[in-house]
Length: 248
Image 1 (cartoon, rainbow, N blue to C red):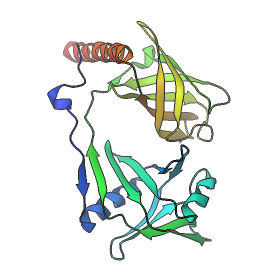
Image 2 (cartoon, helix red, strand yellow):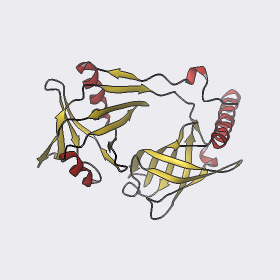
Image 3 (cartoon, rainbow, N blue to C red):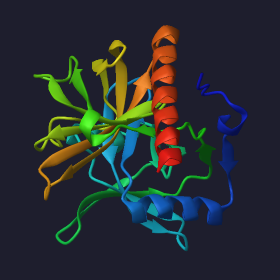
Image 4 (cartoon, one colour):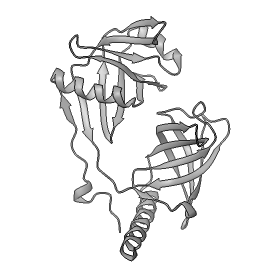
């Protein structure tokens, strides 16, 4: 049986970066890759999306793009502390912001928030769980629903691991789905039966040339029994892939 806790997949302990050079380097990686960031304010359940739009190592400052939804800006301007979290190449990069940020409104670059770079950044290399891709001829039907969605979305499962999966939806749903949002009812019609759990949206991209929205979700509070079923399915796909490579 595929075991997500194998030694080679064991999670690495998080590191705390404290040198300005290390911090600037990792923030710049988020900026250059245009990785989405999730902002959460203390004692508030709503999440907001943003991006790093500037990292100035010399001045030890940075700028965040306008928040989506925009009503998060009022908490920022009120000086409420917040947490920023992003992922770059599977590495979780997060920090706390307790200092005031100022709004910058530019005709060229739009609205942004500028403030000091963090003094500490949490750098966490998560375990590298095996991700199994499904054959295009055998894609699994999936559905996402929840209190934050007016209508459920039906799509296809592209790949899956013990921690999450990649999905495909026809059409543009980039305005409907929200990064960082937890959707309570994710259903995948796997060969052994229906899998149902909550998921958190971690990645979202609309490919205009294909007319397809790609989404990456992470399983949220998945039950032990459901996780065992996922691991069994991943192991089955892994075994089929190895057999195919051997035959080839």
